[in-house]
Image (tube, rainbow, N blue to C red; front, side):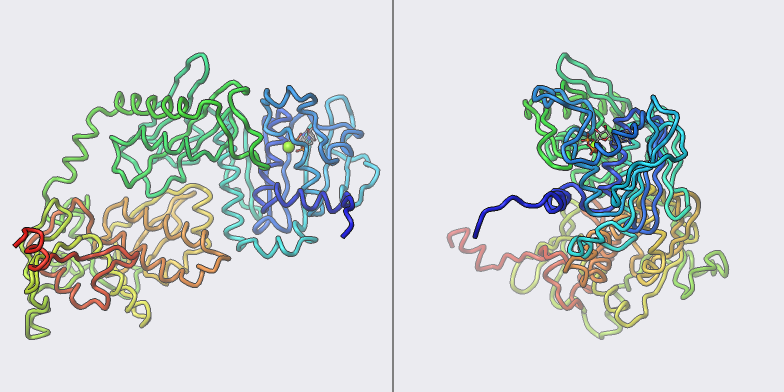
Length: 591
Ligand code: ADP
Ligand code: MG
């Protein structure tokens, strides 16, 4: 084979593959260009999932007629010119690759009016026309149509429009958090997703994270000669089941940095449970020579000269700040897990709990027909030990005799063969999972209506994703209605998820289901999505470590577990029961 230089067009397409992965990456690059052009107001508009049409328009410096053609050439940039500049980058872009890459895989055009010009010019990149006079005020609009029309392979890897749309919204959210001093308007299919005016960072955070999550934000303001840390930390009273709300920036550039994520978690560590994640918006200001942003084509990864030092500062600053603002947290955590019978464990007052009303097939009229006698009798969905005994005419637990609950985590029991230790959470997970699954399969999922609907507030990107999936949620017995901008009310949950009562459990469940659908889409795992959703519901509605259980509940649990088809492993594969036989003990004691 002969070595030959590739044609320019092919080079451009190959390069585009690195920068332009999906519609959201186009939007990211275009918005970054607008920010670099000093825009104070940026409008992002798109249709569907952004593939057919997207547009970013700004009031920045704009480009002259001559610059238009140059801007789309590879390695054309106004941001750096000498090798030394690479170590001093203060703009979002510098590689001169975004516009040519976008243009190589779509039908794009630019309309721009530069500062020195009275006229705007329209340049249809895909036709390579001579820029023609057009109308617009100072600034730039880039319109991108038919993304990947000439790269079918890439198109195939895109997810559904709902998911691509969520990615776009997340991308703009992230940039909007990076620059509260800039107005952002985001429109999808003519609907305004958000309209954020220039504001303080605190206000911006509350617009994106939601009012409730932004209660008790504490500011971070740290500075030494090498590094500054600014932003806000959410109260440790609020925590999440994933790290998606940890927003990190380096010199205002959104970054993906496992090192920093770890540092944030470590800083919060003493104040929130170890399986939970905080939310925060943190910008690390650092001299450009001490950080390399040129590690990744999309510039989202960064490398610090002194990794350990940065980690230490971030975690320490957070730890200090949180302990200053909420010195009682440790005590609160231990109070919360103080002994309470598990039915009363949910964070509901007993009156409110009593109102959690039993099953009705149609959850829509959840306020009608309240049968008070039944309401007060209602405890939790699992059948009682005695009922099971009656049904089966024998002790349904086989020969397992529960002895005591240990550390509010394990049930110590015995049977003929030895001593058993049962993990209370995985046991309930298995029980709930099998119940839900069999009901789901038979199409007979029963719904428990919440008399007082649970109100949950989501981020705009999550809200859009949920809005498009309300019916899917219903299939799983979760009834949700839109209640306000990015606010929803949950009016019904699967009956068997009767223990799913705390606000946090419901919010976590909804978010995890949305995330799981978005993540598995277009991957081989998508076939398991129904099962995954059932697993999430089962998990969130199960007793957790730290919950007390009455003797009655322990017996019920063992009885129910005994009826499961796979009683030894939870749906995620963790063990449920560990047995120490007499023989094993004898060996250990050298008998
Ligand atoms: P880079 O941002 O790395 O310089 P791009 O391909 O994204 O490369 O953009 C090339 C050049 O086009 C930029 O350096 C800038 O001069 C110009 N440009 C792009 N978008 C805009 C815009 N919205 N407003 C003004 N100038 C722009
Ligand atoms: Mg750029």
